[in-house]
Length: 273
Image (cartoon, rainbow, N blue to C red; front, side):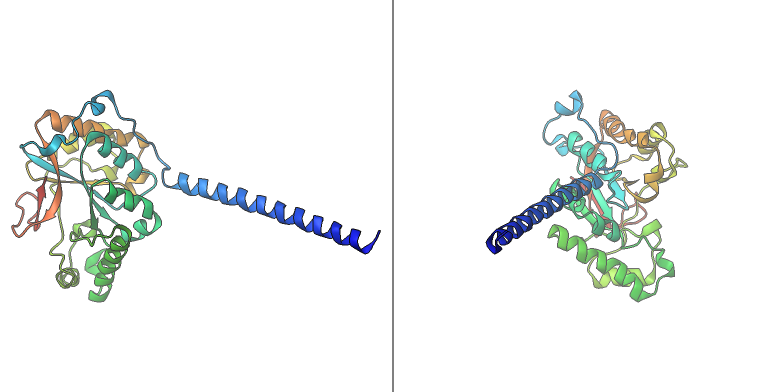
């Protein structure tokens, strides 16, 4: 075999190996991308009903007692896609108090929350117990989350909810420096169990309907402890929305307010259309 023949054979072999490597890389990349897509929707999804499809584009512009659905701890791949599906189908805007480390893990879900017209709010970075934090740690929990949410959505959050609803002097001072006001609380005056306690769909419908009142900010969750509950529990959300509408309620979002809310633990916030 001549030198030129050997050189052509080597070139052919190299070409084959490069092509084979490229195929492997593309296959792996496709599989990885598919896994990443699946990771953002690990739980059930909601299919709009005939009732949903007949809803007007803005059914909650009408007057009436107004409540806010507020979701804490998210986003998560298990619960947030379903929640967003339901809200879109039911034409309801909500307020999401997002946990920083979860937002960092699922940035596309954060962007979807904002793109679909919901309010993006701050729920600290690690769901820490603020009374045990130093002032510096408290400010880092809040500011780090705000910086990430601003980067992801282009809008700086103005609302904050303390994890467990437990404020601290250091946290309050940080909120004042950041121009965010006090922590947003919620209405929960009954002895009904919340979704993170896994009571099931029927009990959750009862919880939401019982706590509903004009200006009520209803405490719900789309991550953390609620993930361990049966996926069937999520069926409460479309049912509760339909039941509240049947009772004359409309839905709004949380906004800062200079007036303390008598319904929601004195929070400097209100439910607005």
